[in-house]
Amino acid sequence: MRNMLKTTVLLATLTGLLVIIGSYWGTGGMVIAFAFALLMNFGTYWYSDKIVLRMYHAKEVTEAEAPQIYRIVRNLAHSAGLPMPRVYIVQTSMPNAFATGRNPDHAAVAVTTGILKLLSEEELEGVLAHEMAHVKNRDTLISAVAATIAGVITMVAMWIRWAAIFGGIGGRDGDNNIVGFIAMAIIAPIAATIIRLAISRSREFAADAEGARISHKPLALASALAKLEAASSNYRASPSDVKPSESTAHMFIVNPLRGSTLMNLFRTHPPTEERIRRLRQM
Image 1 (cartoon, rainbow, N blue to C red):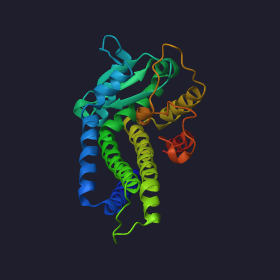
Image 2: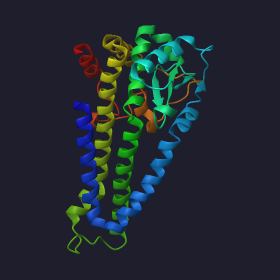
Image 3: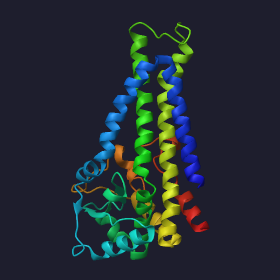
Image 4: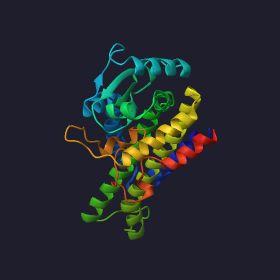
């Protein structure tokens, strides 16, 4: 409940930022930017499962090929009141997992060969419960909404910068307000990115809590996160491994990219230590 409230507040803040920056450009420009961003993100949302699974060369497996995973996922889906998702395996030594799909009826869960070698069955159940929680909470939709609004803000800010170069910006009073220009053209997109990533972090906390309730094993998920964090910190990609992308890093249960962010503000995931602490409290 607390995480959903936080997500709502962050989305409202993002929307407020959109209204403010839109007032510097005008209704027409904001509508055009919104239409562009909505179109791009709608396509990403609608085809997200196909795009991401193809990007990581994920192979759909049958129950005969992966009976352990199927048994775990089927039990979790039943416990969560969800349809059985499709199951995929990604051939990479990177220990990780993710869920995708536009809604529970079109969901897919994917695990890497690395995570199958690293975790016990109980820990794997905790991880897959976390991913099923993302499906249940419709986090793909929430991420798409946040990305759309942040995309509009970034696009309008870019137009403001170009307008300043080729003739200036007409502020609300018709004059060129340099302070407003700097705030809207430079600070606003950064603020939008920070808020969007904060929403992503909030959804991870929510998925941890809901996943622990689905599996009834918060300590198993906490143990899995500790192992994944340690393994991810020491992970060295082999030539055959699929390289993770910055654009999809938020989808994984732990951040697959190390040393790619300079500040905690730009983290796609909350600190693993805090996630473990909250799970142990449950």
